[in-house]
Length: 120
Image (cartoon, rainbow, N blue to C red):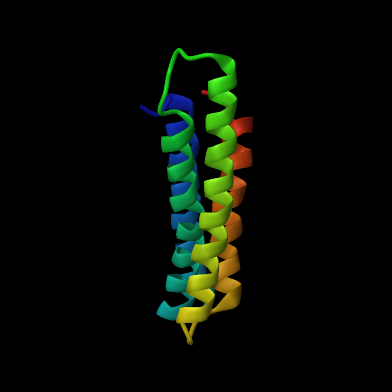
């Protein structure tokens, strides 16, 4: 079960990735390669964030030590998954636009910070 606040941050990250894809498409005069690169960059952040949420918030109403261990494990998995996904994308796609990839990556990453600042 994922808390509503976490869902809100994940939705904001996904929205910012969508915005980055649209901006990449418009800025590149319709180049699908740049837009796909932005999408892949965003997914390299979104997928590990979702895995983090699943691991960290799997248990409720447990001792604080158990919660801390879950968050440390989730952060380690998120870090490794982010590195692996980014490396796989950079190594696999020959026509990848690095600017588009980094734009999507930073858009999704900034969604975390903005999500914590924005209160409903």
